[in-house]
Length: 424
Image (cartoon, rainbow, N blue to C red; front, side):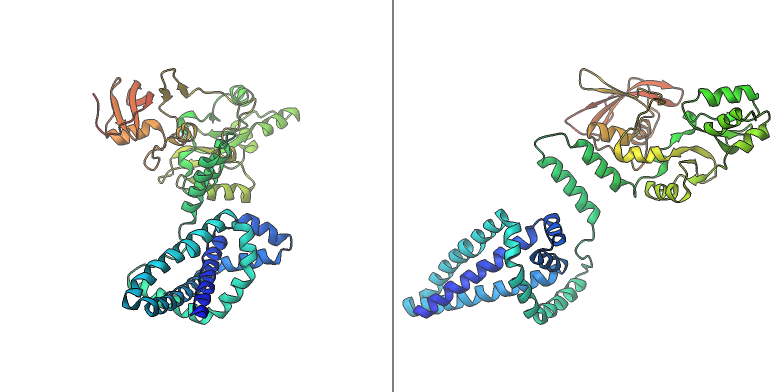
């Protein structure tokens, strides 16, 4: 009986080893293990390889853990039956539950969570041996499990939503930060992830705001426009703004003037201009950023599905989606957002939803509309009158100004109760 008790104790220690190893190997810091491997730490390299084949690792750990737990329980039951008869089953169950729970589960896993990196390095070699030894059994089990999952229609494997995992990790890190302002870094990381989901139509400068030049105008007027413009690239058109024939760079105009070849005719202006680059409004920011890089260009004309001119987008516009506004001495400051002392915010109707979300941490949807006025029209399904108020998405919208059918100024205020009902 003494030998049996010693064996049970050894089995409980093995169970603690498996439980602690599982927690340590899964909780160990990936960046730390990666850098240790780069520095030549063989154990860190083993940890990284084990985690590359996580299914095999977890399978080996569970197999070993269940084997020792079941064997220990069986031996304890036999000892208790020998001591107390049939009632020994109850005693063995109670005793082994307490022992396994405290000494083989909670205690080793708590320690492993507190010392994940160091413990992962210590158990790396023995666990790699066990993974190899148990490989035939665990692979067979994986085949059975895979067949069962397919039978029940679960075809998703691990890692099918890496983007959501990254976004969650960013938010978790931001919530954990106590000292310092990491809002800018979080915004940048979200901006990078959003490049695949955001279309150029959401960040472009709308045609109503684009400064353009009609090449049929007097030449002095054209040159004055170029020299006084804060923009270096200006689309030029022939009579009709939808008939864009080129993009005039201020540098080229200045070069011509310095060389004494001042443009005198529309054809001279066209000769100085570059060919317009038209892109569909459905292009994602990721694709457009790649296209800018491949073509070595910084400026594109956005058109809709019918080929009509919608606006312009530049490399700077895309970069600002990642790093925030990039201001320089030529920027024309336009106040579109005015926080009020009562906590409300007055915004222009053409302010983009993405800018508001980034600045105030709101979660206004931007799938159906790019601007705050567009969102208001989409939610109300009509053109509201001045003074009307609406509540949705946790905000109260009050129309302050309307020019014909265009909502130009809106007051926003956060509300605790979220409804979609009109207040007035």
